[in-house]
Length: 176
Image: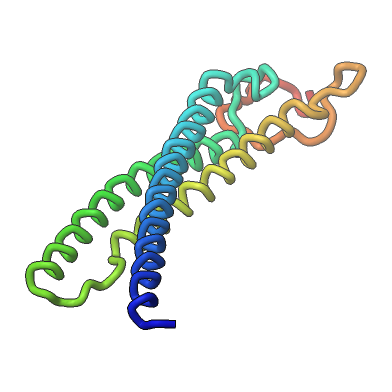
């Protein structure tokens, strides 16, 4: 093959590769945006719905188990980590813009990545992990308070779940 024919083919391959890179980068950014919105939406929704329906999740009791409080904490921290990742993502973009500008203006080599990118990835992982813990704690709370809390005769069965906010009647006899 002639070297004149190889260069246009190589240039076409590079152009296709560059176009593929751009479309993959857009897809990745869309996926991150969708992920962030999903985690924020489901964590916020789960937190709100579980607060509003706490009495139903507690089997009609006016007390809250440690599992329910832990789920609220996990959902709240998930939301916090997610919102923090928006800020660190914006900072990542600012740093990258400055680095690209410097590389173009001074002809220096461009280096990929920065501390804000790493922070954003970590915060997104933390948000997802905390969301899962929130779901697990909420499920444990619902299971413990709805499943097996009363047997067929209507008598309480098993040890009571750990609760917060229960008050003892000082006039009650032991064992009643």
